[in-house]
Length: 245
Image (tube, rainbow, N blue to C red; front, side, top):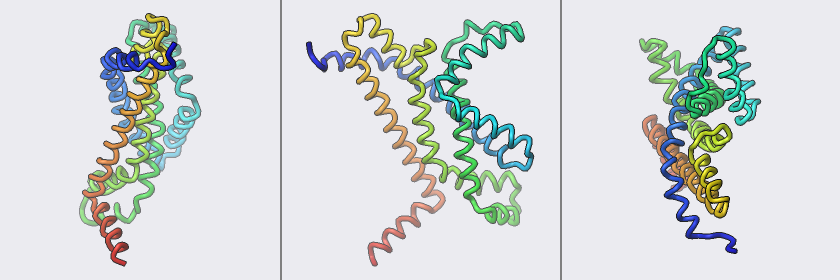
């Protein structure tokens, strides 16, 4: 018996890859909601209203203090029961991917809100005051002055959070979502686990490649934002000056 069947490993990719778009779709939808609500929650935590700040802070603590898979089970089993017994609404026929998107969005928005809040606080208040004195509205000052700099500061952490969300999609099989891992599990069941090692090594390589791609895209975006704000140029000048010395 072979320790590792390389031909079976190669044959795993055509079986697994057709389910990659579905996995990326779950990730993409969750990122839209995570970023949107993460920015909103960060904005709420920066307001002077203590009630709003405390409510958002409590939400963030609850989400961050709960393991992702436990939060997924709470949503998957709790939401249908709540809607059925409390409002007479039956959603048992809904696609199970809905619960993955919902849980990833909640999980991601809580972490992204903290990342963006710390990035906002890193921008000197004098920049906003200077923009307002030049005639910009508060929204224009925020959108054109504060937001680009905050995004540049937060981008490395946001990239890590996006990769983390990608990896969390792997637990969707636990509620019956047929994505990369769910398909692999079904395939191993049909083949009695003959090539289970080869299949999961193939999945590991797919996730690894996707993580590298997302990290590279984050780096490219960070460089472009830095170039737009003159940060990359100044950094290169400093390197050149140090080399000349």
